[in-house]
Amino acid sequence: MRVRPVPGLSVAVDADGRMEVLAESADGTERFYCGPVGTAMWIVLRQHDGDVGAAADALAGLWETAPANALADLEIWVEEMRDAGLMRSEPCP
Image (cartoon, rainbow, N blue to C red; front, side):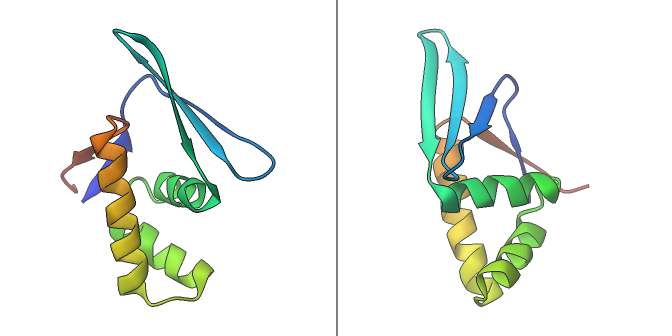
């Protein structure tokens, strides 16, 4: 599975690793925040072109954890991002 940000988001990361995502909606600008773990997931997903499996493998290496654990955590986070309307799923090519 690949996941991509929905069009029109603005993303900024502060010096502490906290990410702010701005999304335009009919009600105006909505703000979402992620801590450093969510920020790392976002960055690694973007580095791996939205490939959840590849991103989870990279995170497992960075976090020195089992790939299955990293994948489970990443899938939960991706689902939360989809529920918030910030990401969408795409089939793998």
